[in-house]
Length: 437
Image 1: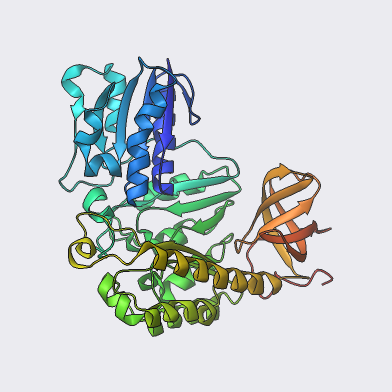
Image 2: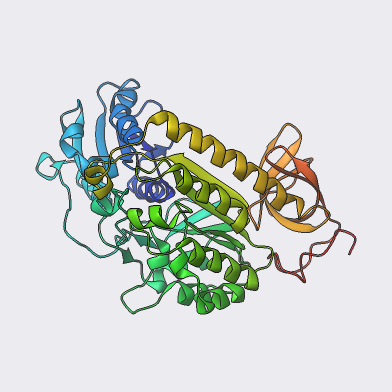
């Protein structure tokens, strides 16, 4: 039997879909991530914005265009939020929500008996849901170490859908990381900064447990609360650590941060950036910024614009505030006009592009390590350890390669293969020498 798993939304959803694919294959299914004819469709949905939720609802009809008689199972945040909106759609036999996605494999193994189908939404708290190890994606693999969130930012619906923070055991997570055959492995979750397993192991402990991994280790999005001396010392111990820190910001205004229920000030955030660079001088610090939060004045926005340069961000992801029913911001604040949000996003992105060029320019004439991913139009493309997109003329094998950065190029930099590849692969003052050194 052929199945298609379609994924909307975040990287955690993508990893969970990979686990479902592996589980279905073990049950004898032929499985694809690409839309096409199938007897079973699994839709892993998203509700982070209203647009994501709308696209999730539309996905059922899009799938059935390939086979009007197929079975459809819906999971993910959009179905957790509004299960009946999916259950009433044609051919949907089960709705399982954002938690315990392994139920889908149980249904498949049992042959989809009617008694086990229907709407099955877990709303109580539960331990971390162990799923099959997902298939290794290209040259970069993702390991899910945590789920849920306890932060309850006023704009975010995810804690209400994913539930409270819960973590995978360090032993289980470390085994998957150490066993990764990918050139790079990314540790991901809804809030990996809050990682703490039932034995009390935190993210620093996990990094130390995998310090000798051959795969390059990169972290997913983190919070400023994670950045302390102990964590940074642990990261420094990792043999192949990728010094990119996606440090979530959301606003550069103290007033807006308070109304978002973000528990830090701009000064504290900038202090964490300085602390990172005291240990990893060449680190890429990247971030997310919301434009047009309902309480954001023009002066508040200018604080966000200014902090892009003050923090020296290597890259930013800016997006307009999207009101989400059920959140405190939705109940309390009136939305700003779309035109205001759009204009502010454009200004943030323009400033972010300037700072990105500055950051990349600092590596011209220096050595980096690229993990080759694709070959297109005569160039091998991939990311360096500090998340610069590199373009190398010719076709390189899919492995880690030392390169010399030549100049700015497209959305990253042009580089050439270096004659020798030294041990390790992290950016630091000793290893990241000039191309002639």
